Image 1 (cartoon, rainbow, N blue to C red):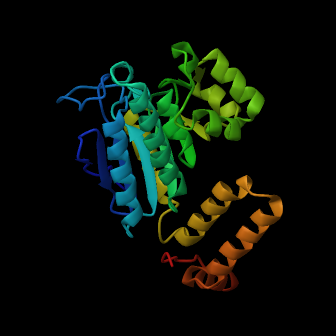
Image 2: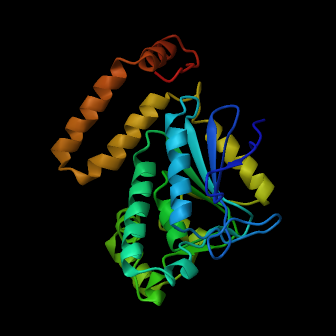
Length: 285
């Protein structure tokens, strides 16, 4: 059984990072309500600041360049919050110009996460509100812990919008009419409701410890040698970039991605294994 790895803090002590023995990178958000590092034993809402976004960026790039990492799992510290979003204390103390550049850098960070050619699973262990949900929506698969909290984009109540990709990603995930309704109402929804509208992929019951173990077990199916990770990356690229193109261009992108895979060792292994009626053992190239 794969165990939760030891986690080390990133430079600003707001994100913890570790890798399991089978190549699952864990990125854990950890901060108090002001966005400062947690003290010993403290459980915070994992709100983010520019410093946390820089830590997220560092962790994402670290996972991207690690050839032993094939899957990334995002989660939050503790069992009450995945993330409560941007620190209101921080936003109340900076200039409009800083806020703009803060949103710009956060957009760039989450786009880098979204474009990373490794599968990203968001383990929503508690409330995912505002910017917390925006981070979750930049992940590929979202799995929430039952009865652990709610999710939504309530920025309307602050007189602003969800400016870290929230309006763009929610519209693409659940459709314009529903997304607009949820954002202008500021409604928070239970994870079961989020699953009904395809905002989260699944909702799992159990304690936090069980949830973490179940996430590792689930993520393991996407690691080597069980999945052809190069194919996973190309599927992700087609699904991320293709819908923004005219249909014929998407088909052309798909063909080019497929052509690259046909030259891979994993495609040869997968086809041979099927013909020989055995389980393939992929190597990632």
